[in-house]
Image (cartoon, rainbow, N blue to C red; front, side, top):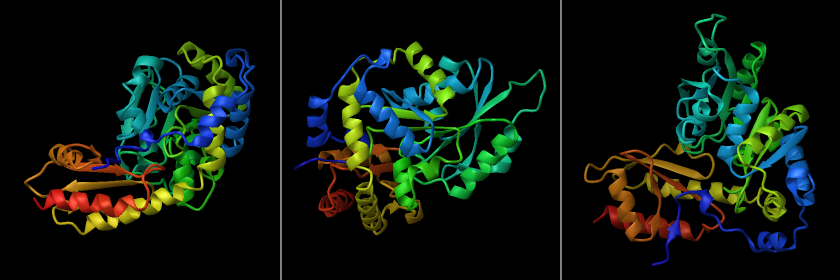
Length: 344
């Protein structure tokens, strides 16, 4: 039985065009600023994000942590949504690397209430850490790929700037957000001061992320990238795949969204599962296992035996992620296999 891998869009394979571009890429030493392919990727990324400058990094986590280092000083505080990737999945990087404290604010489908965020901003008091940065995530991973409403993001940025604070967007899947809203990534990222996006998720490149912001701030971030060992020398071999990704893989994200919705509609009809279709906004399907005979890890294991690879999101929730290597024809096959396991 052919496996269908829905664990994450990080499992995507580079396309033939990417592999050819990597083979042909002109390269130089990027630490000296001499890799023409990296330079071109950074220029294109900055344009796509509507920012002055951009920086190529090895991963989204590295990009987020470099962003936090570049916005803060030791002993300060960073406001994050309580289930954000930065807080949940980045190995306590805020504390370990920036020596800052994270202050969490609950969100609804990943969106923080501006009033709660404003209440979390510290008063000027020598007993308190200084609030230095507000981070948002768009799309929001643990909420099931939901998109931040533009009005919410604009309100958060306005209050941050009113308090003299920058806003960083973990936009690992910002192109998914843009496609879902019928917009552009530059429009989505317009309210924030810095934004990160990944090449290695829905865009299907093998490696890499870009961090974008003002020219002066990106120069600061470049120094922190070096500090973290991120000077990758002839990195144009990797950047070449990223250029192909930006040129050819953005618009096709709509196919992933359509496949996720079709998958969600089928799952919503299955006894023993609970799914809120309103949360299926991009390429993720997050559902709850309510059948008492199963928990999420046991069902994930059973589905793996029939070639449906997915991941448990806690004791009762399972996440499925559509991507370039999952075709529309795979969706009914996945549904049949899941139904077969549940009916045992």
